[in-house]
Each structure stands twice: as C-alpha cells, then as structure tokens.
Length: 143
Image (cartoon, rainbow, N blue to C red; front, top):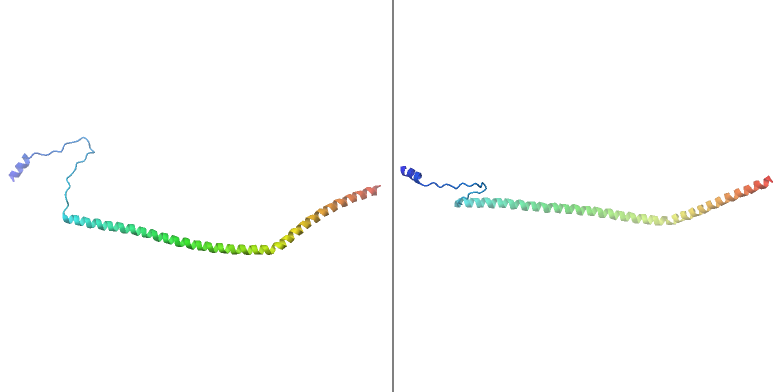
C-alpha cells in the first residue's frame, strides 16, 4: 500500500491546459456499453418506434374516417339539395301551366284596359265639347 501511495505521489499529474475560450468543450472517450445494455436499448428503441408508428398510423386512419364521414354527410346534403331542386322545378312547371291558363284572361284584361283608356279619352273630349257648347249657349242666351 505504501508502494501505491509512493507511485501516486511520484506519478506525473496530467493537467489540462486552461483556455480562455469558454465555448470549447473537451471530448471524452467513447465507451462501448455492455452487450446486455445494447440489447435492452435496442428493445426499448424498437418498442418506442412501434408506439410512434402505431400512433402515426392511428392518426392517419382517424383522418380517413373523418374524411369518409364528411363525404357521406356531403353526399346526403347534395341529395337533399337535389330533392329541393326537383320540387322547385316541379312547382315552376305548375306555375307556368297556371300562367298559361290565365294568359287569355290577362289578354282580355289588357284589351279592357285599353278600351277603358280610350273611353276615358272620349269622356274628356265629350266633357270639353260640352263645356264649349255650354259657353256658346250662354253667349247666345245673353244676346
């Protein structure tokens, strides 16, 4: 033991050179882990990788399920819109048929309206003529 202590005292001490640059790091020698540790680390890595990939695949699968549901809902909405458009088309055809049925009456109303306008003009002319006659009559009566 004394010999070991003597060697320790006489052994030259290796001192690391001091550097002013604080950003420089010192390298350490890489040591190979034991065989059992490598096996355990590989198992752990593969287990975590499997968990990660399972999560990624599950997320992708859920995205596709969501897209499928959205497509189904969109399809149902389009079917509803199609039914609405068919009903609107049917109602428009009915209205056009009813309008076509009313068209002769509407034409008669237009003819009557034109006749009433002509009759009104005739009434105004008759009124103006009667006023002229009245004025002439009063003029003749004064004489």
